[in-house]
Image (cartoon, rainbow, N blue to C red; front, side, top):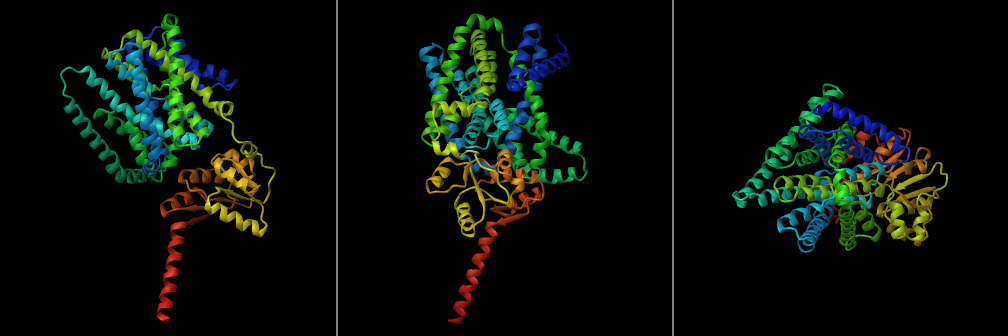
Length: 542
């Protein structure tokens, strides 16, 4: 069957019917897509050209996923996340890569080149599945979600040297120094074009596009930017997804970030669905029958070692429960490992039989992931209990009316609460840091709750619509914007007060429709100026 469009129609039809059925049992749609691909490849024969055409189409799902990640993680936020990305991510890839390489070489008898390729590919986790589920569960900005995303970003960047490594291993003539020089030059050119040229070009370009007042033209312009950056990166030897990620970071600095994200998400999810169908099509059930015991042994061993090592790394830097959740989120093997294995197979670094065993192992680990992430709190409770006082404080608020909601219990939030106490005002504190909540409860604070105000359901639970005011007093800029988006979704009648750090953030928050914005930098500057004038007057009198 060589008609790619017919294959696509059949895949979408089967996935739709299957997902409608699975959704009744709250089974993630990813599973439906994978099983649809497996069923189609088992029933029909697809030629190599048809599979490659679908694979190229599916690759754009990853491209737009990485683009939306770039929108979420602007350059300024990446600087703030340097520990999560470069420390946690770097340790995870290097230590796991070396561990699996040693196991492959010493215990499984693989050649050293094959062991290195497989070992470092197994260190990768599934960006597509983890981010999709974290977005659905609204955990992407939680403590463990932030760590998981940081590690995933580093893993995606690490794919480039891994692919380069395969080319070096398979080449008998090319100079390693020449190849490395070309990669460095290409990276510099790509970064300069996308970051520097793009930074000055995109704002003017989208101002010009939005003058047409057409959502269709605006969306076409977004597609143009993403595909152009992807092709540029590919021309210089990098992956399409890296170019998309970089242009996403660039556009995150513009005022069009939220509009782009809202318009693009449905297209991203559809293309990701096609990607998961193609993953299912790679499963050969004959190989599972022949090598089932090896596949299951590898599956359990890899996930166990991966989870334990990630937990061990993170335990040095963060709370036990956060480390556990992050390790549960990243225990699987990722989709980029499939691309590495395919290239290694083409370069004859791994055999066809080993390739099939690895493919099925990867897919099975990916199938398990949504179930783990959907039930991560239950699993975490089984392995490590939260303190009793904290669990009692999680979303157990009563019925409130005419109250003040304080989002964040840092130094500013604590000062505000002291003032409200003196004036006898009714208030509710929402804080997502368990240590802060625990300390406040220990000191006798009865109106603090362990809850993330960036989730709309939390504000609904504490009756934001019936509150006298909602005060956003947290330090995290991304969390502030998410909370503000949730606040305005309840209607314009809500009195909201938000603290921002600078004029650019003030402009973004104001565009959302927030009533009262306090620019801490301007207020501090005014206070300094008043103090300076007072000193000058006193000096003149003397």
